Image 1 (tube, helix red, strand yellow):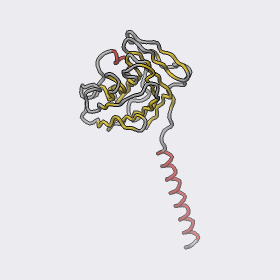
Image 2 (tube, one colour):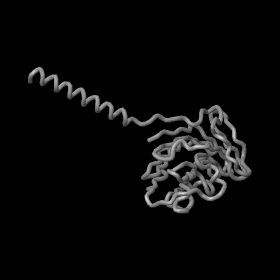
Image 3 (cartoon, one colour):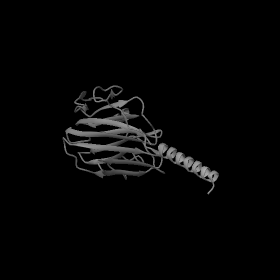
Image 4 (spheres, helix red, strand yellow):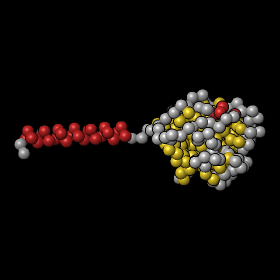
Length: 212
């Protein structure tokens, strides 16, 4: 191999290495962005539910006090509408109904992920094809312990809606041909992005999101 050939080979190798590095750099997952600093509500506001319980911040948590029906907080704008993930921890402190009523965007639509509804176990998405979380294809039944933190992760893409609780996948919904909507009623005030509980004392912490 001549010196000139060696130089060409070396230049080609370096260029290929740089291109590969750039590709992997672009493929790195986006950083998680906090949505709650654990100190104050910040941009979160109390959702104007009739008969709502007290909302407070304590020990790095948003506390949703037991209300006559719904108690919650929401943001005026969703951090994203498509191709994103949200992660948070939630606890049912006291009560026997849903402690997670997480409303979020799927494109221009909004849905609510329910954990612990209809007497304490129903888990799923409201609404899919006009059916709520207790009666559609996402319906699952899970026992939740009061005083226990559960890590929830929601992933929204154009093709699918996925939800995990800890390491257990609770929702795996193919979106093609599905009609998504919110259950009619006060819960609609949680849109475009909010949390609610039903006649239950609940706590939230470590709320964050990232773009996919």
